[in-house]
Image (cartoon, rainbow, N blue to C red; front, side, top):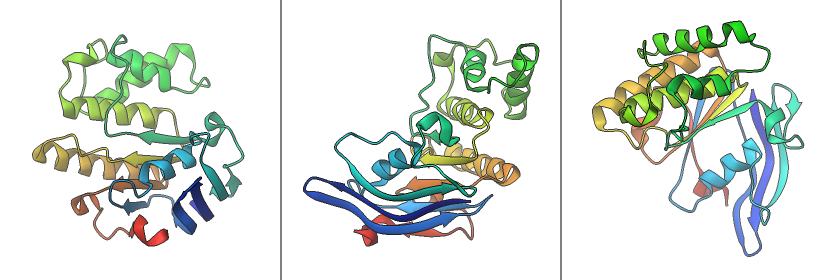
Length: 210
């Protein structure tokens, strides 16, 4: 479970969130919605441990009964997927995936694990491809695979579907939801589109937390 307890986020003259508490269970996607400037990205940055220096935050972040807001980013085990796939274009698709694999994966198995992930995502044979040659949907799938191969204990999705056309958006969305259900990790999804809310999923609006 990913849990936020009594969180307040403030800049010098602006309150973004005030005494907010919420949680996402394992295998659940909790959707957060809000207009531009409501604090969506600031909240995700705080959760992952990448807040701006001038942000004042109070509250606690818990992941599977482990307090995380006092830990550095790399120790939190929380992945994040942005709207922009943010692949390293000077590396191949496979090399992008290798960067995400934990150090515990033996060197002899690393390429095999990356290629197996690509095959599972319908991208068999893409290991040596240049990321610049990928379509938007293919880049999105590679970016998600990279996030999942790092074996996060929770995942943050920052409007990951908004850059795709309608057909790709729907198919990629369903694939993401299926992946999350299979892995049983808690997920926070930030979006401005109600169509992104999983069927039967919970949704909260940030404007009500000021």
